[in-house]
Length: 219
Image 1 (spheres, rainbow, N blue to C red):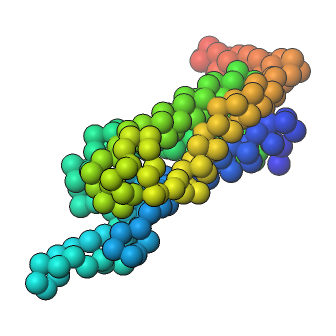
Image 2 (cartoon, one colour):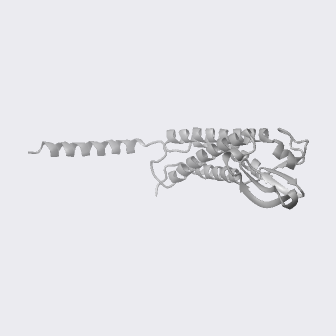
Image 3 (spheres, one colour):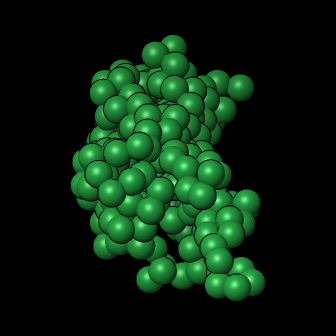
């Protein structure tokens, strides 16, 4: 089974898969921001959170210790987080699509040419840029709901008593690797078509056309 990728292209394919999986997994996990509320640990992502307060008996607040997403897109507590959800999700989808095509290129001949590899690298750059934009938008959404967890001193780009989680750094690191390393490696990923293969392809097409023409001209 012959690959359509060079040795560098094989490295690019597996690195593309690793960055796509890292960014996408981080996108879905609610561990972008860590804090505490009512003595319980709380964590957030763009559209999910773990542990949230509800009104109990006597109108007192109690913490429900479970993870879940917000009930609807409009329930996401800030416009910045809504934008971050859409932008980061689009970037992850683009990286996963390119990674899938790259892995298929390891198993299929003539799937990825040198030019196709460069186009896929450009798509990875756009995907990484979208995820990076989402990471930059995230601190803009630290609104009053976040202040309940991070303290009154927290504000946009001010963590207060909270700290950024590992999933935030993982998403940003995956995006940076896709933009810088994968985009560069993609320039050398595909194989140039060999002249012999081109000649053989032309000859096959010519012979096929000649046979069809002879068949049509026969009485």
